[in-house]
Image (cartoon, rainbow, N blue to C red; front, side):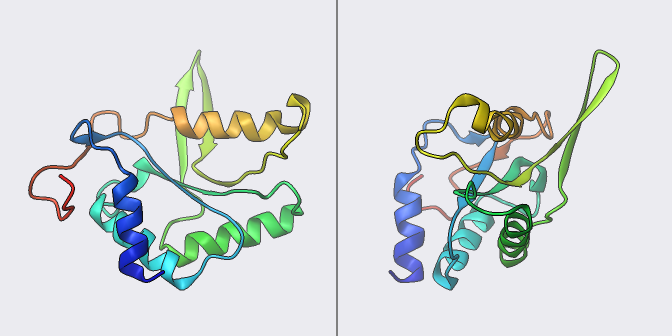
Length: 150
């Protein structure tokens, strides 16, 4: 697929019921091709990544069969290709304790895995999804945006 086809396929899947976005999760797996990188970067630009970096999380998926070193290598490659900071964290205080969540992670869930096998990755995924980064700012998609579906 061409860059334009990939980007249009992504845009066509976005259902815009509201004009605000609170979280963007970009998920890749396996080899990340140049055309995919270009399309993702175009979406990131459309979603104002430069102004809302903390609203974005990057997940390298299907990493359940990889070593820890392979996970970190693949996640670092993904973040580097997409100009994302591998070390982005969210910090919150609850009950007097400070909790940190890495917003960019390599995760994997085997098809028939038991809960005990995936509970750490599931906990990390839920922490990423529920992280209330930049609570008073929302990504605004208005009529002036470059997306033709709005």
